[in-house]
Length: 89
Length: 298
Image (tube, rainbow over all chains, first blue to last red; front, side, top):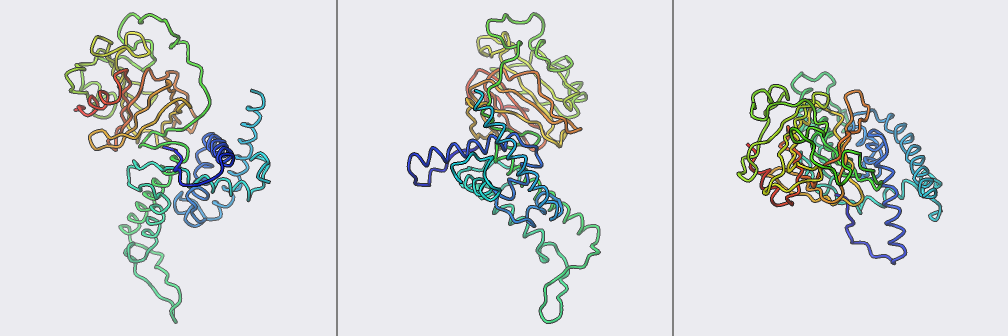
């Protein structure tokens, strides 16, 4: 379950921005394909190294690099789609 | 530029934003292979165990002058199988953990958080009268079967179908098997004074059972923004209690195509797994009663 841990002191404004960023990123991550979400999750949410990510997912280390790059691009596209959807609403 | 929309930021800034949300994620503690909140640590520990020469049972061949160790490339079948199993274990932990980034994971089931709203299908329009015939007949649950012929149900589903022994529930009034969903079994009880009606008129309880291993690409479940997800335990097994908005269900078929289930859930739902079969119990009975019914499965 995703919930704030509440151990970070920040201004109310900063907390709102952080919450919006988090919700926005999680919404976009939730729309990615499994393989994109896996590699982004391993590299940046679990903070695994490329070698660790390769072993965890079962792909070559070189593939981690290319897959991460593609996954970030798709994440960016998804974030843009979400932004457009919000603007249209 | 932090003020820029996320999609316009550089890769480094986007990565920094991703890393910044990691500490705010409470990872699920119900992963079938353990793990706990320190998911990254658990994955690392498994990785180290898998690559450690001692734990892998490998002979270490040291290079002269204290150089780095290397292991012989030609492993015996047993050692290779062990390593494959370890790597598979790690992969499963990682997959389940990463599923947790956007939701919760159970074998064969993935829960995704999704803020988007979903229009209810026509089958759940309010004010409908109960569909005549066997309960659940209009819910597209698969081929009708005799609810009393458990042997036939087991054979059709490909696994042993369990029934609640709780006296308040009694025997199901209808049973269905959907072979297109890997032998998914649905048992339906008609509503009555002890079983309050769900969102599906005339239906008091729906129990769904499916093998998690049938669909390696996972079943999926989208949880609406107004749905509350609470980790629970059913007879020692991890599970989740979902209450609030009706949910809808999709799964990834064997060919990788995402298929949306045409049926939204008819009430609050309890989901749990015994490690092989995943169960879903939808009712209007509340969490504790539903867990009690679930715990009586036999």
